Length: 158
Image (cartoon, rainbow, N blue to C red; front, top):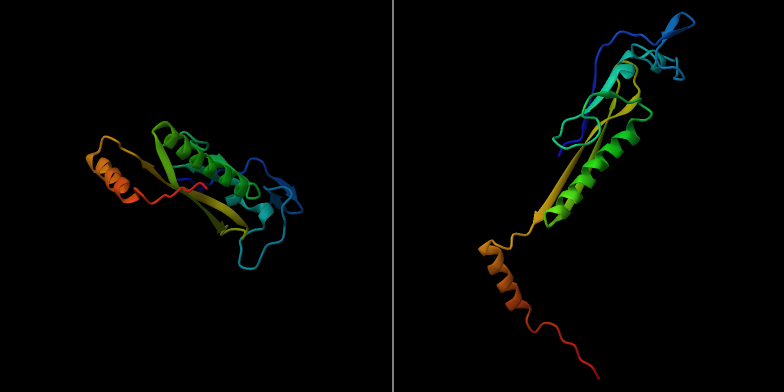
C-alpha cells in the first residue's frame, strides 16, 4: 500500500498581493530570503502550488490532487497514512486474517525555491497473515504442533 506523494506544478499566481515592492503569495510567512534561495517563504510559488495525491488502489483521501500548506502537511500526511493502517485492520478482520505489521514512513523535504521544510509524503506497508484451514500443509502443521505440546502444561491443585 502506498501513501501520498507530493509534487509541485506551475500554476499562475492569482491570489497574491503586494508587500512593499514584492508580491506575497503565502500571507503570514517570513519575507526574508535565505542565502542561496530564490525567494522567501511568503513569495514561494512552489509551496503555494504544491499538490498531494494518493497513488494506491485503496479508497482513502487525496485520490485527486489537493493542496496542503507546508504547516499542515505533517498532520495531514500522518492522518492519511493512518487511513491505510485502518484499512489493513478492516481487511484482516473481514477475511479471518491477522495484521502482523503496519509500518508508516513519513518523508520530509526542503523546498528548492524558499528553503522551507515540509512533509513531502508517506508510505504505509502492511503485512497480513491469513489462516487457510483447507490447506493440507496447515493441517499437518497443527497436528505436529499438537503432538509437541501434549503434556507440557501441568496444573496441580493441593
